[in-house]
Image 1 (cartoon, rainbow, N blue to C red):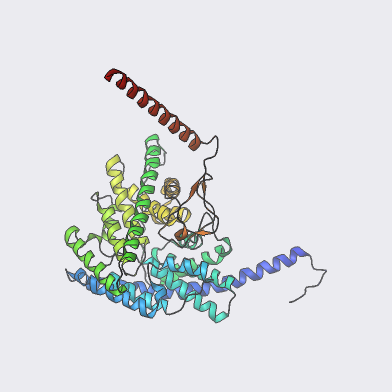
Image 2 (spheres, rainbow, N blue to C red):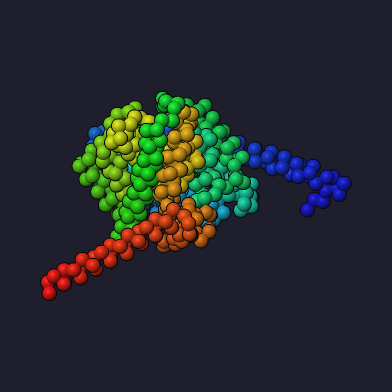
Length: 471
């Protein structure tokens, strides 16, 4: 240990330490952003080319059983850590393995996701990018022989860089990487390097020719009374949609566990069921579903059942062995359900499709801050205040559930709900509700109790009257 002279003031020592830390993480995060930006851009270009090639054939989705079989086979026997939708496994690695990710995960996730999406699997592209980013960062940490703490920070930088590169949202990507780990907390220690790596990765991807979709939404600057009502109702609606998505995924995961078969064979059966669903409902729900998302954002009316069918396609694909992300399907579900909400209420469809995209993400992934920032980066500053309110309502109403069950609960979403701090979502068997005296919830319970007592006594009184008349 280096001992500094006693005459140096502690304030100066503190500044030297902080300056050294800033320089260290500036260099590391720039390096991480460069490597992840190049890796993810290569993956996205390869993915785009493969999708364009297979989509030229009208019945390419008939290859889904084979595609999911191959994806599950590769993952099972080469890199089991690559199973699922990418980001989930990186979160698990950060919490349980100090960010340690075996490098074979990167090429396996690369290949398995391309096979799944090229044959029509309903998944996203951000999960693999986050896992590729995390895997590359973990390899860098091995090269520099980092401590567990520094490894975790660098892997979080990889997540942020991967997410920023996919959607062209460097600020939201940086916040997503540090927000998605916990429910009720943000990992501030990685804030600076996450921002730097996310911005560098975004710039690298842009330099290499990757293009992004940005569509500023025109909103009236006045917060009218009717719009306040629409905002409140839409928050409740999108919270319900988020909860339905999480529960649908959980249902198919439980179904998958009950089927005792070789995993690649289960993937083949899952792909076969998707072929049948495609023949019934059409090809709009295959792959990334970008045409439907774009139509919704352009203000087109989307059929009312589209958001739920997309949930089915995505849940089956991921539960039965497909490889890919979950955020792009969340965008599809959010945009389609937003179009439905606007059609029902008579509001502007494009506006609520945009808000639905980010608010369903906020609720299902427990990331209201990054989702709110994403709304500004994708759709302009005017939509920000409305999107933020709706994202927070959606986040609160989803409860202590998530499409990322490896998230750790630090704080509950209400003081009346108790969950032991530090618990992982997937380990929860339920939550304990403790109504506090004098709260609105306590008043509602008392009103319900009073009503039940009144109804019971009324029923007994009427029953006695009838008995007397019969006698």
